[in-house]
Image (cartoon, rainbow, N blue to C red; front, top):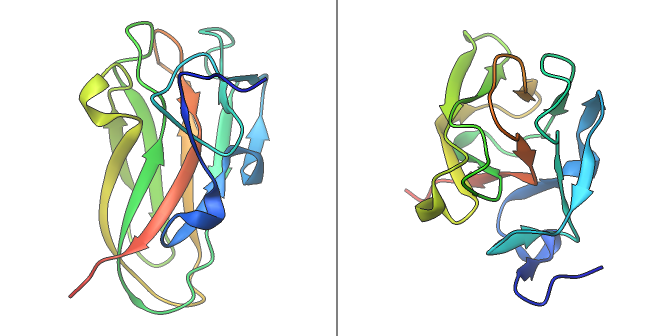
Length: 151
């Protein structure tokens, strides 16, 4: 059921490569929700309910069409009951993995959490893993966006 207080974004209408949570490889028990916004990519987002710590992860594998600099962004709806430190690992084949700790309580982010800018090559594997190991509070995953950085 759609929440009338939330703006829904169609993944196809967004710039760059957008993978909704359903396009990630899920491990563990995740629950779909539309309870909080202000923005949701697709029809809902997934959360771990604050349970099963260390058992839940979602892995995204975006295919990079053209070599260049890209910003990688995680969409996760903020709320006071979220985890203040969600480990997100960005791994690019041939480079060392980069872990970014995302504060999902930060309402100023409006669901957009930049994981940084990366030099990506066409055909080189990129994986972004969101894990609930060592987290407190609820962990949320809505979508991953990979956007070319304008020169």
